[in-house]
Image (cartoon, rainbow, N blue to C red):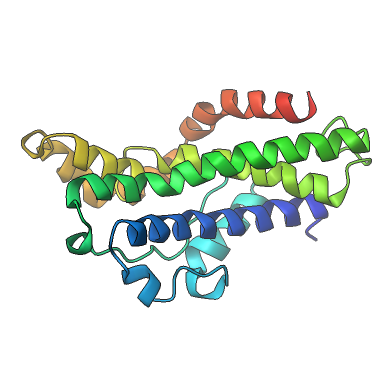
Length: 213
């Protein structure tokens, strides 16, 4: 039986993943590429964005397994040839998702602080915490996780796109050799080791202290 905490965590994860992808498409459109718009991906309707594995199954496993926020929506299509400045603009498109998550984290953290402290709650699982307060708390937490996760320099994450465009191509030989194993590395960091958890734990403590500390 999923309680309200698990339900809020799952809802926050799915919503935040979708907003992350929309941000990529919006910035691509701003820089001249309308591919995502023509594909119907600049919509808040979740249906066109949902990837069954990344948007539903893995987030559900993350919630039930008490794991860091993990998942993805269908990648927004981007045609670099349509961008005004291909190399520079692809960096902007890549950064759009994590930066959006950071902005959302700040906004939701402030709102969660106001609501939960207004309830007199000392934690998100305090019985005095309202449903809105719990949802806002997890929206802040999930966006922190997603920003940190997507900035990892591992293909196919956004951090990898930054490495590929900011480091001279002649120095990327070994990096490109590990690219086919990117998803295995990511799964290992999230599900089979505590490496990612150790990375975000200090950030999460600071966020929790700000909201309810």
